[in-house]
Length: 154
Image (tube, rainbow, N blue to C red; front, side, top):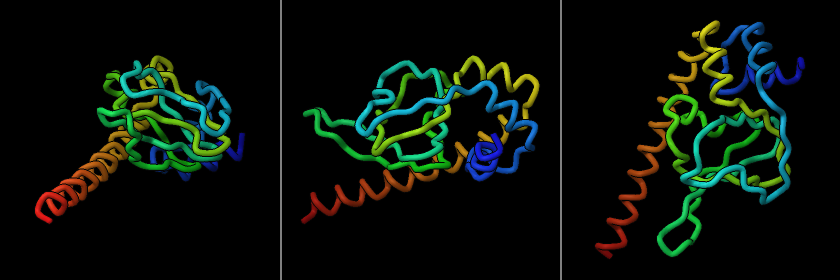
C-alpha cells in the first residue's frame, strides 16, 4: 500500500493530496493487469472509469475513416487515462490499449462520485489536471493543422 500511495503522490492527477485521501481512494479502486495489445476500451464505449497506471504503458489512439490507426499519445506509469469520463460521463473520445504488460488501478465513476462527497479537494485537483490535458490537445491540434497546411501548400 505504501508503494501505491507514493506513486499516486507523484501522479499529475493526485499530486499534493493528503495520505489519508490517497488511502481512501485506493480502497475504492480495483487493481487489474493487461497483456501487451489488450484493449482497455474503444472510442465510443461508455465512459465508466479512469485508469491509474502502476507499471507499463497505454497507447491512446483513434482511427481514420479507412480504419487506419492514428496515434495520439503514450501514457506511462504514474499517469492516468480516462479521467474526462469521470466528470462528463460521455462516450470515450479515443481508444486505449496496453503498449506493454500493464498493471493499473481502475476507479469506477460511481465510486469516485461517492468519494468526492467526503473529499472534494480531489475533484479540484482533477480539474487542474484536465486543464493541462486540454492545453496539450490544443497544441497537438495546432501542429496537425500546421502539417496539413504545409502538405496542401507544397
